[in-house]
Image (cartoon, rainbow over all chains, first blue to last red; front, side, top):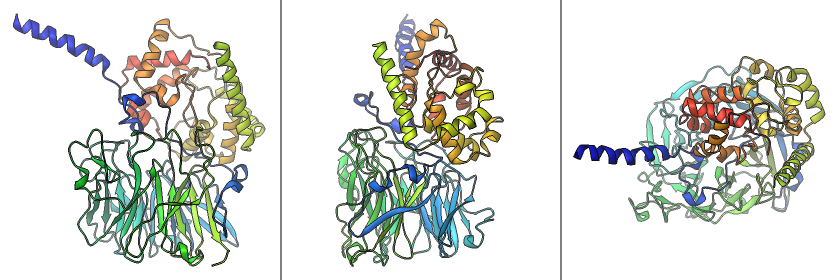
Amino acid sequence: MKSVVAVAISAAFAVPALAQTPAAPPSWQQGKPAAEANSTLHPFAPHMTGRDAKELPISTLKVPAGFKVEVWADGVPEARSLALGDKGTVFVSNRNGKNVYAVVTKDGKREVKTLLTGLDAPNGIAFSKGTLFVAERGRITRYDGIEDKLDSPGEGKVVIDNLDPNRAAGHFWKYLVMGPDGKLYFNIGAPGNIVLPSYMEASVMRVDPNKGTLETVALGVRNSVGMDFNPKTKDLWFTNHGRDWLGDDKPNDTLHRVSLKGPVPNFGYPFCHQGDIADPEFGKHRSCAEFAKPAQKLGTHIAPLGMKFYHGKMFPAEYQNNIFIAMHGSWNRSTKQGYNVMRVKVDEKGNASKPMPFLTGFLQDEKADPPMWGRPVDVLVMKDGSMLVSDDYNGIIYRISYSGKK
Amino acid sequence: MILAARNAAALAAAFLFVAAAALGADIEAGRKKAETICAACHGAEGESTNPAVPSLSGQPAQFIATQLFMFREGNRKDEQMTPMAKPLSNAEMNNLAAYFAAQKPGPPRHQSKPENVAAGPALAKKFNCSQCHGPQLMGQQHIPRLAGQRYEYVRTQLLGFKAQKRFDMDGNMTAAAQLLSPEDIEILADYVAGLGAQ
């Protein structure tokens, strides 16, 4: 009798529970609260076939007085990360596509060559001493002497493999930079919006391309898609994307500084955001006081991507050692902001100022869907001190130069 | 109410046309190309008469251009479409996309079973279809319109996503399809194929 009742009760509970099990949402909706169930916010995808610069409101782009912005190259599908070769080749990566492109300038004309094909989300590229390194979803490869082989680069040699064994949806693309120590620095993103990462996820790592040695550089980093080294202090700086679905005004996306001489910092994800906001779900397990703080808050959901310290000779003195950051968002905000390039001043002690707009005009209507006509992804300082900015939404690369007073 | 919705759809279609024209994609060039290389399978003005071949009329331009790009680059593979996309330039893809986006979709060519018409809306919500494809499953930006899409084509795509064999730009459809039973797929394909443009 007792067992019959038990079965009856469990059946009564189990059946409706199964019937009501909600289907897992798309990964970008993971962590969306019930109160936001009817939100129409969604990420934006690039025009993979690119758009002709002549069809776009390029003349509405704004830079400070004395500066000029122009189209440097178009027809570079989904132009993502940028890297500069010693001989002047500009390498351009893909995230949704499979290619790496080489833009070469001959007799003042730019030619876009499809350099590498068939790669797996090859978002990260870095050039060092004649070699192009490429970070795909699950591996990093090297192409030695690449600028002498732009028409027949051959197969890459593997530096490290098996970086993405789970192939989870989420932040699987990588950024890649060469450190002053000869090691390659890259991110392993969190496999979702707000999830407990497993070993090595939500981190910044480095690998020695000669020995293959892998080391952890920073933990508790949701997803960094932009890094550079302060040429003065040799510190690593990187951008980080905060979690989605905490509302329009929190949390901030952040800028971080890591001394390579100190211990490995933990910046708090998924327990703590922007150094001082406890996560509504995970925050009860750990305190924000335990974690390292960001160097600067950059704006909520603004999606900082590529960043570079400026140490070229063209821009005025005030811009020296500024960090230029490409803002690719926001999408997870009812009133959009960003879609610009900002700069942050860094003082002698390494303190970072609040971000200031530098290149604006992509954001047309902060309430529209889509709100923008272009999206900055990465910045690159050229040998003459001018700056390139990639735009994956249109497949365009812009050039910013200065001809005013110094 | 229905009239208002139709007016809104007409306005939206007009806006799409203006937007595409304003961006300079050449609709007339797209039409000529489409008549040469697309119409034999996808039908005149993108209205497919074959249930296994998708209709392209009124699909979002960004969706069409993106899929053509993915066929050409080998991300999405198909015996028919891969060679068709191979010789197309990005500009030609944009023209085709602008042309098909500007075509008014005709009434659905599929008659859904009454029981699936009844079950469909709840399933579309439960499995998050409407989150990306929109409340009326009309698609947006790079995401296709499902309303009125050909039955067998939708069914084949869903089975492909479930088998993790269908190209997927960001992993969302593969993840979503893992939760679908074969019965769910039958119901959803039959339901969406009979929906009119709203």
